Length: 342
Image (cartoon, rainbow, N blue to C red; front, side, top):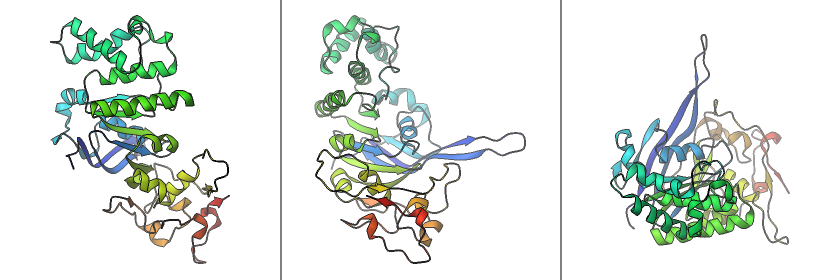
């Protein structure tokens, strides 16, 4: 196997919040010890509920924020703050909102040429314009769009412009932060197909952030499932969808709509309180909502083990196991922590 383009080791990001004259600030652990590798031509999807740390992870990968702990390497070289200006050319991002990510006062051509004007100052204007026009065609837009303003385009067209801008510096890693969630379903399909085509042509490594598992199923090669800032499951897409090992992943998959109305599936409705990110329980953060919880889950935090398909769980699910298969002792039985199933 080829070497990874980017490697993250025990990556973490903490924030100090609150505090005052008589109170100490609290620590918000937005991301806690996440590990992964990104490979050329492959897509790593990061999924989870809102607030689980996906976008914070994206900001660290794109060198917008510095990790509190852990390390990043790009092509085997450490990603340190002193090298950010140069390394940022190799890692670009496409944001969620195509309406807010483009400057409404600039023409499309100027928007596309700006990264080159900042980072390739020795490049002549004619060469910058030529590359910008070439990139417009690559993302499926027409030559006349070069001199138009962003308000003259639809949401899908704006996202194509944002993708073109991200590719102007020939990056090695492209971070896609919910790139289709703000678009109509029919447009989502076209943008996803474009991203797949661009990856095949340019050998890009994608970090695809989403909460929509139906989209992830279409684009991902490997999946990381996050919960309260921590990776709780990691594995190849086919394995995670076919046989999820962590109860939280099972619950997420059960909420994904299916196109076949005749298909039977277990619908898991989690009950119980979501822990505060400012006061995460000492054991497994999913324990208050888990139907397999035991004493060890409340006392010790499980870690991802070594296999390719791993789950941070002391009692991982077996293939075909359902939520209703859990057997709890009378001492552990608590109706508030059991799921409701349809």
